[in-house]
Image: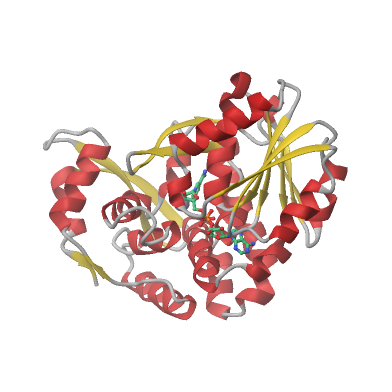
Length: 338
Ligand SMILES: NC(=O)c1ccc[n+]([C@@H]2O[C@H](COP(=O)([O-])OP(=O)(O)OC[C@H]3O[C@@H](n4cnc5c(N)ncnc54)[C@H](O)[C@@H]3O)[C@@H](O)[C@H]2O)c1
Ligand SMILES: [Zn+2]
């Protein structure tokens, strides 16, 4: 299946097909220097499949986890490209999850002011969400995505077969972003989760989620307005992720939690909890509400009297941006999600 992200001169194809990992070279030019970025958790067989198609592949295997979205790893990628005489005609290829994608994409955005970036996502989260849209970033001292750039890939090749090796917690984690896509724009997608045969429906789940994101990004690439809808569950989610210590709770798990207080309909909240339970995603958490509130205030650089825009869902498929006083956010945050 092929989707095209239509962004004028920055348009690109998104190919979703079992086995596509061994055919990437037929879809884009790998006959140049290609920096193949993965991490230690990505099975060697996937690296071999990609490197076999590269005439001049240079492989960098990073440590696993959020900690690799760092200045040190960013520097390592840039230095490796410089050592191997990469020019503006060469490319960076990300093979892995959102961590590898965000870091490698940022290195591609910066090296010689921007070189080609190919994304081959291998986690549910990256196949469903992070591999398209062009947001790239690294973390600064534990503050997530503080340094980054918009840099669109030139090809996204998604091979759902790679999900067979993904640990179950990571498999469920990424599905939270698909649930989000369902809530904001595609009730039928949400109902696929209620049907409960996720493995059988995984290609449809990935595809429908990508369509939701693509439709939004095409209208608002740089998040001036509409793209903020994709942040449903993320204001709180991002704060929970950061104050619980980066990497302890995964991104999707935090987004799953963050969607609950922003869902106004009690029946939709109940349905969300049922789906979370089936998937093994967290549906409850206790936290220090004051710390969470302070994190958000600091993160958004706001004084105590400020107002913040949040995304609320009235019902399935119906979300809106709402500007609320910070005091109201404090009430929404409470002391946990129960
Ligand atoms: N750029 C965006 O638009 C965007 C959107 C959402 C999330 N993100 C970012 O994505 C990151 C999270 O991504 P993630 O959830 O993919 O985590 P991840 O990249 O850390 O991958 C999860 C784990 O799975 C392993 N792995 C990857 N593919 C595998 C496979 N096929 N088989 C076995 N193991 C495999 C990795 O080694 C890693 O340990 C966060 O940093 C988040 O901020 C970015
Ligand atoms: Zn997200």
